[in-house]
Image (cartoon, rainbow, N blue to C red; front, top):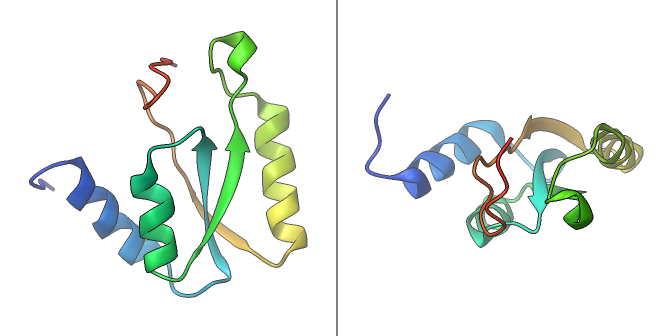
Length: 94
């Protein structure tokens, strides 16, 4: 489907995915505030996963797995993983 920009598309998807505070979205850190603000506004939980600055802001499987397990331990049901390519604000590409 088409939207009038990235922000409305992100908001639409977050509304479809988040039902309550037990629903989480995995978001790369550093991140664009659209995600943290939208998740908070809709009552969900943001699950941070950290990018490796020394490796050109790459994501590491170990970081993803650790963040997912930490969220599960807190009773969070992770419903989506945000992948930004190229990364904003880092400019990193997959």
